[in-house]
Image (tube, rainbow, N blue to C red; front, top):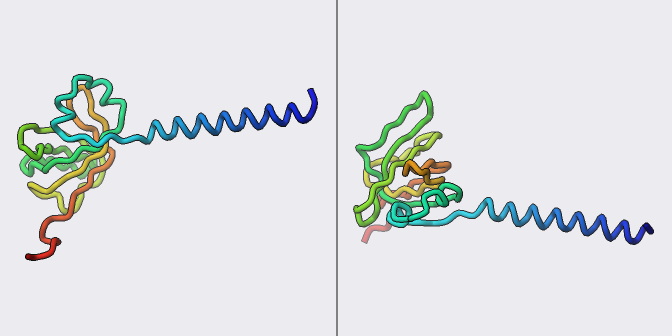
Length: 133
């Protein structure tokens, strides 16, 4: 085998490996934005558990259970039309302004037990920061 053919072969292998890593990284980082109603109505719960979801809703204040020793937060979100409730389990620090009725955005995976295992919990700023009319 001559040097030119070896060089082309090595470059081809490197480009193929780079392309594979790019595509697999993109597929693993995809996040689907869904409402609570869409998640709970989905027929294929097993498929939802394999993909990252971003779900928003309002916090049900009396459902919050915070265990600081385990840094575990359990709570429920209610849909905007208040028809569906979704339980959430988050292992991490409780957000500062975690009050009843605040808008919450949760990133995570939906389990077959119908619980959203959260990787990230974010709260929207309360209306007191909005401009007065």
